[in-house]
Length: 176
Ligand SMILES: C[S@@+](CC[C@H](N)C(=O)[O-])C[C@H]1O[C@@H](n2cnc3c(N)ncnc32)[C@H](O)[C@@H]1O
Image (cartoon, rainbow, N blue to C red):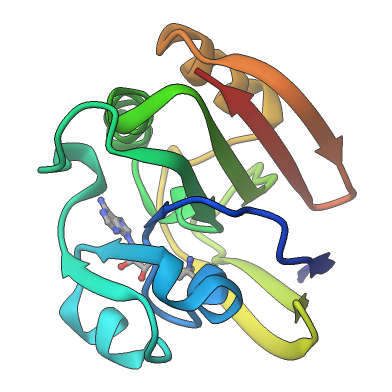
C-alpha cells in the first residue's frame, strides 16, 4: 500500500475553494469558514467536519464567477477523477482564480489502479489535528504523477511555483 505522511500548517489567509472537499475534509479542518468546499457527492460533504461552506458541485463545471478565489486546493481529490475531468477541473480552477492566485495540489503518484485497487494510507497533521485515513480507487487508465498535472496546469496557463515529490505522493503549487 502507498503511504503519505504530511504536515499542513495554516498559512493561507484569503478565501479558499477546496475541490473534492468532502470525506475527511482536511483543508476545511484547517481553514474552517475561510473555505468553500465543493464535492459531487452529497454523502461525502455530509461526512466532512462542519465549518466550511459546503456545496454540491462538479469540479469540472464550477458555477462561480471568474476570479472569485485567491486559492484553490485539491487534497487527494484528482485521483478520484478521470484524466478528462482532471483537465476540465484544472481549467475551471484557473478560471475562478484571481490573477496572482494559487492552485495547490496534493495527490498520489499512481502507476496502476486496475485490476488491483490503488490504496493510499495517509497520516496527516492538519495544523495540529492528527488524521489517519486511507483513500482507494479501482479504475483503468488512471496513471498519474507530478509531470502529468504540471502539463495540465500549463495547458491552463498556470505557472509552477513549487514542486515537492515524495515516494508515493507530490505537492504542486501553481500561480495564475
Ligand atoms: C479522497 S476523497 C476526499 C478527499 C478530501 N479532499 C479530503 O480532504 O479528505 C476525494 C473526493 O473527491 C470527490 N470528487 C470526485 N470527483 C469529483 C468531481 N468531479 N467534482 C467534485 N468532487 C469530486 C469525491 O466525491 C470525494 O469526496
